[in-house]
Length: 323
Image 1 (cartoon, helix red, strand yellow):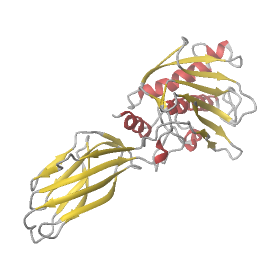
Image 2 (image 1 turned 135 degrees about the vertical axis):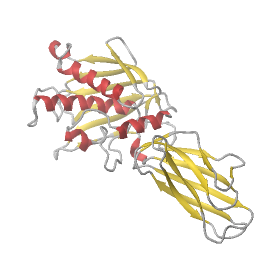
Image 3 (image 1 turned 90 degrees about the horizontal axis):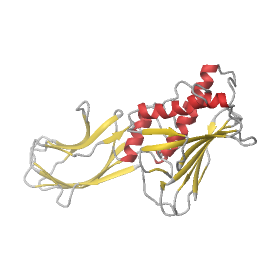
Image 4 (image 1 turned 180 degrees about the vertical axis):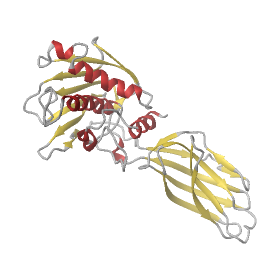
C-alpha cells in the first residue's frame, strides 16, 4: 500500500496537492496530544502554582483545550478571585492564562474551554490557584494543532539515510558535485538538518529503503511527489520514494524558467526537495499557518523567498515526534 503526496502547478499558477488514502491505516489523531491530571487530580493550595513536565512545541494556529472539574471546600473570599489555566512559555516564562471566577461555597465547577497560543515556542501546561482556598482539579487537557498539519504517513525516526538516484534526463554534470541536482538534494537535506526540528538526514548512493529520484516524467502535472509505503494497519513508513520531475510545470530541470533568474530557479528546485522531505517527516500540504511561513504551503513555495523549513514547520515536526 502507498500513500501519495504530490506538488503540482495548475493553470492559475498555484501549487495543488492530491493524495490517496492508505487502506487499513491507524486512526490516530496526530494533531492532538492529550494529558490527564491523574486519578486523584491536582491538589493545589491557595496561592500555589503547578506546572506539567511535558513540553509542547506550539504555533499561533494551535490551541489548548480543557475539560476539568474544580472542587473546593470552605468559603471563597467575598471579592471574586480566579483559578487560572493556561500555557507557560518555557523560554520566556510568560504565562498566558484563562481565568475562571468561582462564587459559591462548596462549589464544583465543570469547565470545557479552548485557550489560544499567543506566540510560537515551547510550552508547558500550568494551573495557578488564587481562589483564596485550596482546590482540587480533575480531568484532562489537550494541545491541538489544525487537522491539516500532518499527512497520513511518515518515517518513524528523524535520523535516517536517503538514497539519491537519477534517470536519463539528468546529465553527469548536473549530478556531479556543484551540479544543479546534487546541489538541490544536498541543500534540501541541509536545510532540514540546520533547522530546529531535530532532524539528522544523510544522503548516499547506496541502496536504502527511502529514496529520492530525479528524472523527466512528461505528461503529468506534478513537480514533486512522494509515495510512502507501509504495511497494512500501520502508518509508519518502512519505505518511501520521492520523485522530482525535471519537466513538470515549474520546469525544474531548466536553468531558468517562468521568468525566474538562475538563482531563483536554483532556490525553487531546492525548495521542492525540502517540501518533499517534509512529507516524509509527516507534514501535510497547505497547513493552516496564519501569518507564519511554511515550506509545506504552496503559496510560500511559489513565493520563492526561501528554500528552508520555517520555525513553524520545525515545531510541527517536533510535536509529531514528541519533542
